Image 1 (spheres, helix red, strand yellow):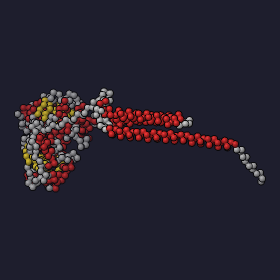
Image 2 (tube, helix red, strand yellow; image 1 turned 180 degrees about the vertical axis):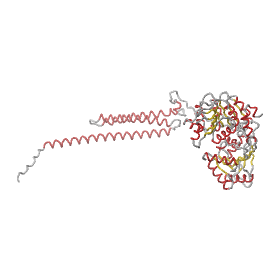
Image 3 (cartoon, one colour; image 1 turned 90 degrees about the vertical axis):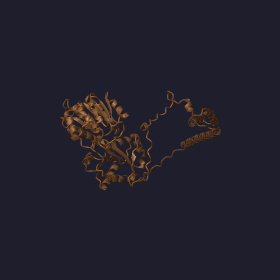
Image 4 (cartoon, one colour; image 1 turned 90 degrees about the horizontal axis):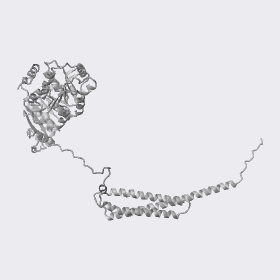
Length: 557
């Protein structure tokens, strides 16, 4: 099969021939006719199989016909998760569409937005964008979607992994309902299918390779080594093998910078690329790596997708990825378009768990090769046997326990009683004794007040009654709280007898305090009465004394 048999026009076929391609890949052979028919497409294929051309070529053929684009309008929108992938797709559109009267541009964050707004002012046929910058441009009224005909989500699984689902839903709400939708991804996970339910309509599903499989053209092996010796081993491999173009993946940004400095110290030209670098620095590093000015490009997983380097011979995993699926995308940078490649992983004993997950995912044990002079002190354990049914599925979260309650929200009597069936029965004697003791204390208080004389007898009786009622309420509340505290516990007879004795002593002490308080009130009342009598006597004596007349003033000069 050739590209000419897929229904592409002569200008596009000429551009394909200039790139040296003659035969379409399996994903291209199946996706191009479906897109030209106007169908929605869901296509999954491993990295490096030509997915970008699989939607770029038919997209340009469809856009050859139709109304000219208006100001700030877009006819086709391609969403990508990373800036590097957006730049790669935009380059592919320009390469294959250079013989067509179509316009295209790319927008992403990390650079000034004003030049992008100027390019969109006249409208473009194809817009390649990252979700965040696209929303910024829409909010500033720099782009509109009334003329949109085709929507393409490239590397959709990666977009979900990076947390772009909310931005994608916002963008989908802005687009017209009548459009063609193309969904290209490395895998069809459950999240991707859930997203596709509200996106595509009666789609054509295309899957040309098994899920999470690696290309057969890539030779893979691992090198057991201690963690502190990884940089030295990498330098020795580069020098011994005379590697001129190596893509090295690290787990962290600081690790990428540190490794690049170590390589430069060993007189190996290197550059780092990661999220903390400016877009200009990332673009320059990638351009210098493609041109051969630098031998080693150290990158984080941001470059695991979106780097399309022709005939890249070597990929090195300096650190194994935390997610096993990222290993497939990392080594997919080599062995592209049928070419051969090599993938080496430097593995220490601390990465046994990650190595096991990767081997279970790809369904094969990786060959181990020691580097002379760098035998590890901490031996890497042997890999376990492969599972027949593939990688282990994650456990489902446990359901929360349901508490059985009545409809009114109150606990049942059995739950309130506790585990012991006789717990409620053991509390009844204590409650009866407490009530009897409380009644006796109230009666004693009343009799004590009755023995006191004076006009304050009624007042003292009221005080004693209130004290008894307070004791009764406290006893009931205290008994209730103690009952709740003893739910489900076994209480012995000795423990119960000790509690009764303590309760009795507490009541006796409170009764004595009440009696002392009553005596004090009575003595205070008698003292007040004596003070009033003494003050009256002083007033009567003062009234009986004759008033003294003031002495007459002298009138002598």
